[in-house]
Image (cartoon, rainbow, N blue to C red):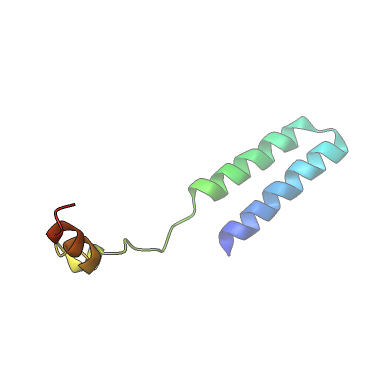
Length: 67
């Protein structure tokens, strides 16, 4: 949700900069957008990280077929 708010603020700043002919607002909007992009914490974990060294069933089947 925070990322969405930052992106909307960045879009608003860039649009305001174009409408008001203030190039420094474009740069500020781009910096806010970059901060939203890089500041986003991805909550998604690795798919098989909690399984340890165990491989998925499909990988074991492929290895047993000598592919």
